Length: 433
Image 1 (tube, rainbow, N blue to C red):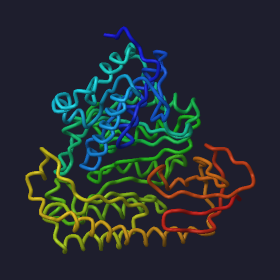
Image 2 (image 1 turned 90 degrees about the horizontal axis):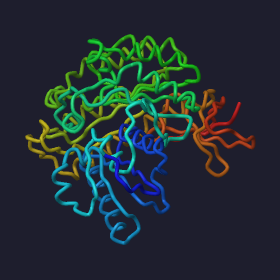
Image 3 (image 1 turned 90 degrees about the vertical axis):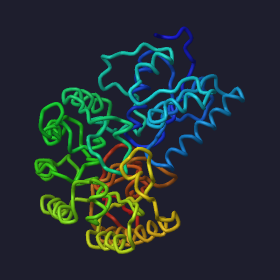
């Protein structure tokens, strides 16, 4: 039920991943449609604050809790009227947060969009398919194709938080993507907890390839990027489309987590060292210039020095273009939580640093090999005298950037041809051609 009093301005704070960001954008779209003034992570004073929390790993949970307490203090000081909490952390610890955070005016889980919209004084509109208030730069946007996950990875709490895999109907996604394109978005970044599983629940088979085929035909979409694919039973038609369609970026984000067979089995990943290597080879065979981003975990319970060195050798051998790594974080009610977390945190960080040092050198060598080459670069922003952009091989926020110094005025959100002139480990410098 819509409340009688509507706030003058609502500030939405987003913690965690891009999937959370899309949830915030959909909330903001509902509020905007109701003629409420809404901002994202604003620095100015607002009446209400909504914190969209992350509950994935310990560091993220602590950051969310710290943010909540900071705004509780702001409320006590009279700087805001009301404070609401939503998202993954509150879904996972709903009862505890309601009991302990008495200063918070409402706590909502990940599936309570209608309830929080109405609590904020608005009417929830079911017909607003694809309506979002984009918080990214206006030329790119995330497209979340499914919710939840059917995998049972032993270290991951996402299925406990988000539930089972639920694909968004293809017609809804095409409607949303068309609206985004009409608003000026030229780059779509497809996201899900398990992108390659898209469609199984709705169409009884994997439909990511079919979705890509239709998305790549939408006028105005110049880049389509894939995030969070899964390594088991990877659909070959996706690789064929990537090879054949000029607007599907030669970029693959595929978290592999480890290479030791024993650890992969304990993680319940469903792939082995051999099938992992075969898949990487298949990627590079189908799309020779593909850039692969992966994520790895170090310090998993019982990980020996030999198993860590096996992982280190795998990184040296595979030469991933982009790599992120995390230290293992025990999460309640997951399979691995029952295992003894017997590796000291200092040892975990030591392994993490050693791994990233190897990757930094690989990244430097790969970037140096790009010197003299010409690439299509999308300009994301201007900083001082420099324009900052990306090639199709780089995703925003997490990957390399191309730095261009130009006396010519460039337009943010436009594509330009640029020649690489210098290279560092994680940045490239270029000049317009």
